[in-house]
Amino acid sequence: MDNDSQLIVVDAKILPEVFTKVLEVKKLMACKGEKSFASACKRVGISRSAYYKYKDCVFSYEELFNRRIVNIYLLLSDSPGVLSSVLVYLHDLHANILTVNQSIPVDGAAAVNISLRLTEEAPDELNSLNSINELEGVLEVKLLSAE
Image (cartoon, rainbow, N blue to C red; front, side, top):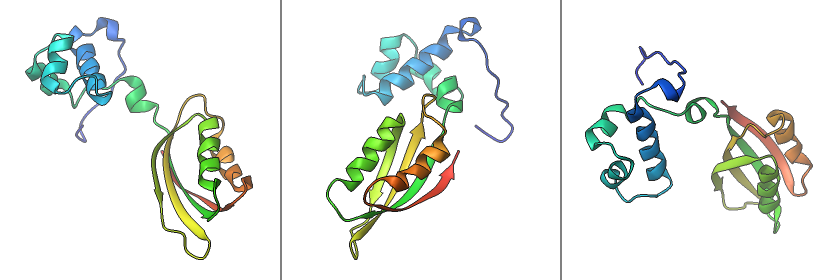
């Protein structure tokens, strides 16, 4: 989207069917439901040119506006199960983990950066994320960014 774009929320029931079909194609490709855009377009019943015309301008409300992306830095002790317990804790918060980057442990500790998307079911994310400190083996937690 360019800087001059204006976003509006419209009930899909009043839009031309092509817009919902573009969303179907995007979902099929994201979930590996089809091997190519051509086959995905054929499956949902739109032309490839229609898909390419609208693909960069059509998004589901959830896809565009319900993003609560959080990036955290953790310093974890180099002990078995510490990272696993953090991941289980994040799962219990209904977080969708996007990336995990861990450095090689040095002096008994490893730095870990985790990017995650919090869902609507997630409790107050900032307080919950700060309480990761209470897990055994977690030496430090820093919230790097949140959208």
